[in-house]
Length: 98
Image 1 (spheres, rainbow, N blue to C red):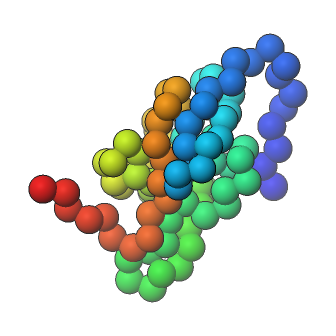
Image 2: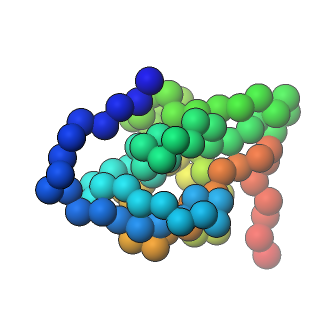
């Protein structure tokens, strides 16, 4: 479904997905970077556990919620990928860190 247009000149940005090394193009949102790396599910809903994935890619649907650098419930489509970011898929509700 998701296919990147060729851009050989784009800089590569390293980051991790659930602890695994990955890379995407400079300028990608987190949601686009996940899709480009074959991650089709970013979270499971807290009530039913249903898998959710990026849908609208413009911040309306909240289906792309992920944990970024330890902060949960971030909209992946609204956050630009930065080198070294730690992105984690979410399973259920976000835990409160004290």
